[in-house]
Length: 265
Ligand SMILES: [Zn+2]
Image 1 (cartoon, protein in one colour):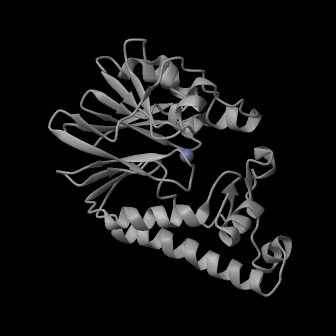
Image 2: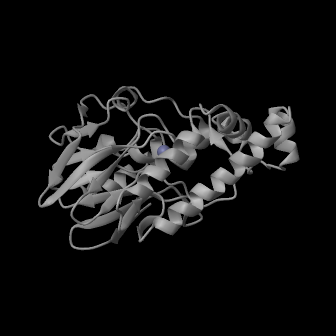
């Protein structure tokens, strides 16, 4: 399914999702900025996306996750697709998703032609800087518009959630440091890719930093007392969400704990 969410005359949020009982399982936002697209949403909505990309001149991709790149294949051969260097090989040869992620987002198709994104670009009067956002994934970037102080943050500020889990390639301390750098940018509107635009986002971002740092302190204290990863999980009562087993090892509570202790994925 697909819904449009206009922000102003220039920016429109394009929300894509898989429908379950008429409702989105989870929205993934792309943004249309004038005649440029930031991300392409999920593959399960790509046929609906087709009618919204007429006149689009470029597609810029923030990172390789399937909820951001699944619609890339509907952009025609005349529309350049630009991506960060680490994203390019994944776009050309996307991993085969398991049944659960195929259901939730859909399987991206390989993209043949992908160009390397430069560190700055313009869209009409808007001037953007490309900001690296490592942590959630190693390849991710965001787009900072200097005149309006807009920041298109991809998945740089995770959704508020009580879920304590991580992906196998996620570096959570690095993701916290990335959020602290986003706070240092002068941001008036944070364009989140799962929540939509958030005005004056400083408190929103700080809350996420505080939550993850709180978990990190608890985990590191127990680690220093000599507790194992399993013991830490049980002492802190971290419960898996219902879908944990369905991810077949892509998400784990142990990944989160290990990453918080050792500062690496
Ligand atoms: Zn992501």
